[in-house]
Length: 179
Image (cartoon, rainbow, N blue to C red; front, side, top):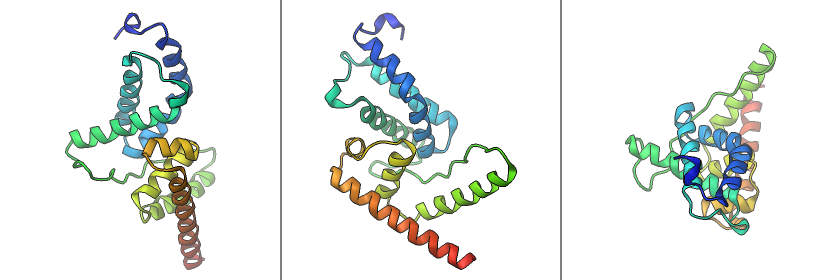
C-alpha cells in the first residue's frame, strides 16, 4: 500500500501511532506469542489496519486501546491459523526471554526474579495474566485495559488487585521455602 492510498487526515495519525506505539505494541505482542517474527507481523498488521481505515480514530475512541486490541486479535489469529489455538480458547502461555542487562550478576539476578514471576504468573487466571501484561508491559491505564479486553474498569481493577496479591503471596512463599 502506498502513501497515496492514505487520506490526508489519516497520515498524521498513522505517523504518530507508529512513533508512539511501535515499541509498546512490539513488547506486548512478543509477551503474547514469544516470537520476534510473529510479534513484528502482528504489529505491522495492526498499523496496516489503521492505515486502511477510511477515517482516523476519533479522540473519544482512544487510539492506544484500539491498537492494542487489534494487535491482540492479530496474535490470536496467527495462533489459530497455525492450528495452535481453537476458537474460544485462551492464548497459549509463553515465557519470553528478557533483554540482557549490564553485568552477569545483574543478568542472573534479574533472570532469576523474572523466571520466578513468570512461573507464578502461570498459576493466575488468563484474565489476570492479560491485565498484568497490559498494565505493566504496555503501561495502559485501567480504562484502556477495559477497552482492550471489553471489561468494566472496576473488573480490571479487581483483576489487577487480586493478581498482584496472589503473586506477592506466592513469591513470598517460594522465597520462604528457598531461604
